Amino acid sequence: MKDKKKITEYMRLKPIEEIAKKLHLKPSQMEKYGDYKAKISPEEIPEQGDKRGKLIMVTAMTPTPAGEGKTTTSIGLADALCHIGKNAAVALREPSLGPVFGMKGGATGGGQARVAPSDEINLHFTGDIHAVTSAHNLLSAIIDNRLHFDGPSGILDCRRVSWKRVIDIDDRVLREVVVGIGGPLRGIARETGFDITAASEVMAILCLCENLKDLKERLGNIFIGYSPSKTPVFAREMKAEGSMATLLKEAIKPNLVQTLEGTPALIHGGPFANIAHGTNSVIATRMLLHTADFVVTETGFGSDLGAEKFFDIVVRTGHIPPPEACVLVATIRALKMHGGVKKEDLNRENTEALGKGFENLQKHIENLRIFGVPFVVALNKFPSDTDAEIEKVLNLCRNEKARAAISDVYNKGSEGGIDLAREVLDAVKEDKHNFNFLYPLDIPLSNKIEVISRKIYGASSVAMEGKIRRKILRIEKEGFGNLPVCIAKTQYSLSSDDKALGRPRNFTLIITDASLSSGAGFVVIHCGDIMTMPGLPKSPASERIDITDDGEIIGLV
Image 1 (cartoon, rainbow, N blue to C red):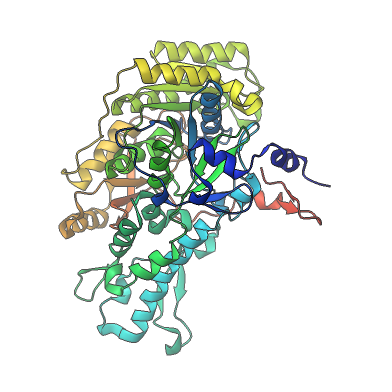
Image 2: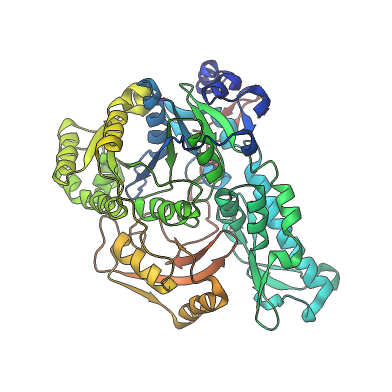
């Protein structure tokens, strides 16, 4: 039996050439991947001088298993802007196979607000993530090859190699491995491990670089470990950047697809926001800013993660401007869960828990105000929402003097997002825009951590062992103290404890490690039990995904 969703989806799709025309692209500027996908070379998009579209960034409250629908809202908002006559497009990250077969089961939106062809986007797409995996692991192979031939007297100390390997699948047993065992022909035995590809510094570099030249330079600047004399060693000293960049030659080109309503969508890059910076490539966003009047982009998880990193890492590159406005996605179900309601009871009306859980959304409202950008709360509607609950949330937003609009794009597509689109346009036109970075770059790394922890998370203090503090001081001494920090922590809480829902207060943020991503241009600060290689859940989405005898994929939503 054929998948009716997929059949209906393909019936609605337009040839990719028609989508490209909306961005004023010619067929000669595209590299087609079938009828509905194409790569666009950055060199094919001419600079438009001072003409530039307006950027709308979508973030959310702290996510819960109840669902928030940030990607769905982003797609629906772009569709709604087109519906009311605006020239709009959306820029999104590429789905990772980790969550596709793990928790999520797909990452292309939902209902009537999706990008398509969804199955192809979710599975392999145009091969970009695999190219990142290969480039990362090529450097790993080069490092072990050098260790094998140079021995202990070489440029790199085998005991102080920090560069791991990556794979685009959740596989917890690979977090720590031993390589090189079995004799001298197999290299030097040493401990290492695997991260998920979305956590790779190569992925971050791909999404932060300006062009191929910048990509290659950043790859060469990757810190890989220390020499026997304890001086930093970089990928350029392995002569690795050229071959790595070669593997990324096609991956650097953004991928053009479409929403179910024919809105152009560039999907490019896929860093997670809990362990990386969580935004699609600056190349894709900048490309759309030169070809559309309004560009909707999404950042991962809540404002404490994706949004903060978007402002303090992505915008700092100077390749894209600060957003003209933001959208803060919330759901009544998530608010009730933050208010103490169990998942099985979320369909029952509970305005009291809703009011308590609003404290979480309230903190995200405060966070966006800290950065000085206009914003709109998007209340993503679910069938179980009651009129009393909806009115309660809208009143609470009014009390915070925050713009708010109901979004029903899942069920109604663009028509369900018209109120949100108009509210966003009003925010762009009428509200004060006074963007500020959270911290200056010339303060110590420990101070940057303190600022983020106290102002964005609401922590009362920060704690770390002496060896972690010394590691941070060493990074500064080696000349990297002026970089922004990328805090890796749980997405399920404002704190580093994923069980602390709502708005935790008087808590200590626990720092467990620090690492240098000199090629990407930030220092990673690890908090709590965060893992850079997730594991599959007890009942992974892979158990529900299948393919029929005639080739139709089922269970991938």
